[in-house]
Length: 271
Image (cartoon, rainbow, N blue to C red; front, side, top):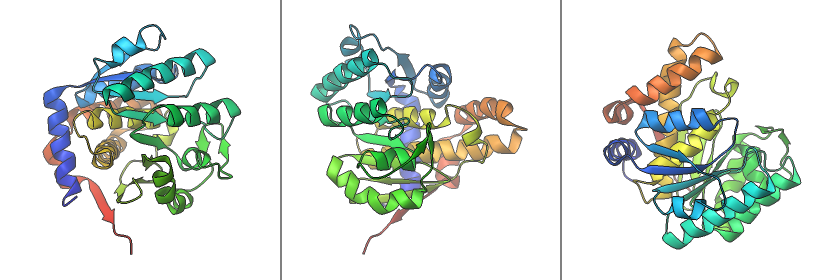
């Protein structure tokens, strides 16, 4: 990837031109904010989780986003049904394993989705990602207690083992498929104080992946876009409430030219 910042800008331009439909089976806590984040970036969101419509809906979508934040057995069944249909149709699937490692239901649901569908990108915090490897990762509810450095050490091998791209978010973000690794800087200290920023990151990966078939550059583009928007929102916000609103405005107002000039993505070269 010769110039990941330029690629991010091209992806944002394509996203706004194509307005892809992103099918979300996501959690009740963030559904409204996630939909607004997708609209602000130029995508078209749909929130559809009924088991008897997800196969039909995902056929129209450019990407499927599965977020296990407020799980029930019925939701797991709907996610597996949508995921198998998306796999058969060759649609990108993005998994957000919210709280994986905290409870058996969440950990097993994430692992089932990975086993039974072809997930393109897993986006999570360090503890959630490490839990997928069966490592002794610990989560405090849905918050990470492991550092991104901890996860980075295992990420390449885990990506190869799972056959997917991992997008690990924290103060610095890391995207790897086990062969290529991109590091993304950006964001703001208020982002963890607002529910839904991580879930929005996952949804944005889905939107960018709908226009970019390369999961590594799609995920890095989405995280760079959100990180820069977070930086801009943080300069205007006085606290978490105003930050939420300014973040949506920043996602809407950021141009491809801004992204190419200001985002900070670099490729790590392994010896």
